[in-house]
Image (cartoon, rainbow, N blue to C red):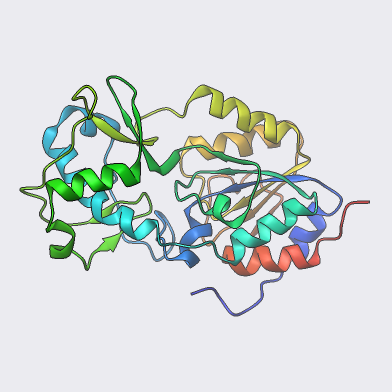
Length: 278
């Protein structure tokens, strides 16, 4: 649940007043929507599947798709929270230039954000690694359900992970759907650990940073390069950096302000305090 105490955002307000800024978000902005994060203070240890494991081992793929079959159904019921909505209002006021998100949950778009770069892709699209056929995740759900009609009912009470995965101990017997066009390997159209973010996506994110006058990080420990690189880039180019996150981040050494707080309360308070641009 979101915190009921209002954080002191005065330092962030002072840093961002009079500036148009890009918002870089991580899993922490979605925890109040019921999606757990990877590295928050209260998060259990997680070992996400790597790209090499997925493509090279049929057992890993079966395990992944079995868990995803359950986790995807949970993910699609999640709704934007107050933090996502505050970002939308800031964008509508012309203060936020856009959002660069490391999340795959599409909650920024659901809230109404217009300029969103999904660094790691999103959870509701599937791609064939051989013929590059793209499928809606809902279509694959119908196929997997037909192949495994009783599976979800047998494992209904599970822990959900941030990437639309679910923690399931046994996935033996789960049948994986091959590509309906060529029989190749189907993969969620998201960037796995060990896989590179597409170059055009990275370039678009850099352009968004360069078109801004500050960077605000919300709900990310910046533990991986995919997000940290934009904070480093902003700092090298003289742009101020503000961070809202519970716990330390890899960007703290270049941050002008680090507010230890939940994103829902902090972003709502910040939106209320920031004046419009002259």
